[in-house]
Amino acid sequence: MYTISEISQLTKTTAHTIRYYEKEGLLFPTRTASGIRRYDDTQLNWLRFVLRLRATHMPIEQIREYVELFLASSETHDTSLERLRLLEVHQQNVRDQLAELAQTEQLIADKIAAYRKLHPSVAPEAFRST
Amino acid sequence: MYTISEISQLTKTTAHTIRYYEKEGLLFPTRTASGIRRYDDTQLNWLRFVLRLRATHMPIEQIREYVELFLASSETHDTSLERLRLLEVHQQNVRDQLAELAQTEQLIADKIAAYRKLHPSVAPEAFRST
DNA sequence: CTACACGTTAGAGTGAACTCTAAGTCAAGC
DNA sequence: GCTTGACTTAGAGTTCACTCTAACGTGTAG
Image (cartoon, rainbow over all chains, first blue to last red):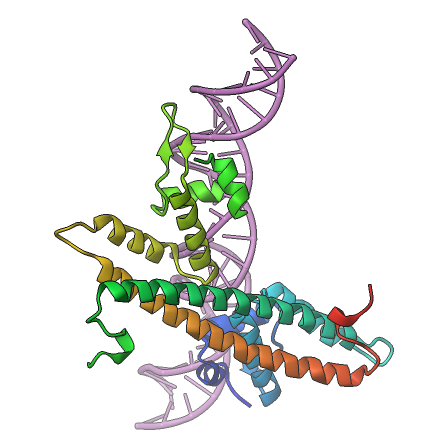
């Protein structure tokens, strides 16, 4: 079990942000008798997944929907299909972002090549001696 | 020469946003005698490039720096090297974003595969008949 | 037992990038 | 000439995702 500061270090996220995610309904740590948050490995791994989703610009509200479906799941009402659909939608978003980035990377590479032609003596930043 | 509404349609960007970019120092359309903005192909292409940079999360302030270097360039003071460096930095950002996205895309694909195992009869969204 | 580092809360503040409003000007068609 | 619709401006408002503040409670080392 981890405290919020341990989770903060393990995920390189501020405690402020972790509490904010809890307030937004993304995390549900247990509490000690005196009210201090305790996180287990399941919560840690879930937070890590949330951070990946955020890094790929999934809105917090959509992540919350996913969590709510998870919590709403029961023997009489299985929500895994809806969760699958949410993931499929986000996967498509990620693929669209990848395409956009790859296209722009190429465009920038072309511009850089043009600039280098103006300065034949100038090596790329990465290859300059330091 | 285009009006703001033509440019808006051509770039699928609201006129509000285009004026905002001008206020932020990214665009410099000419004006008619009565003050109406006129855009030529150079400005159109530049706006299109700006939109690519924005789609890859380059901050407006950095784009403005690039523009200012461009405007500051003269025979006695060439700024193309600095512009090259700005592009190189952004290229690295784009590559980092690509790596992050590719990694998360894989993670989501794995989760989706796991969900599909629970529902063997369910084809991917993209393959379902409509 | 006391210092003090770390925890708690509600709620306010921040920064980026739009997004819109209000009040007015102007140009073209009937 | 008049209406209609597109244009103009300064500046206010919105959204998102944090990020921080203030005031207070807790737990452990010396």
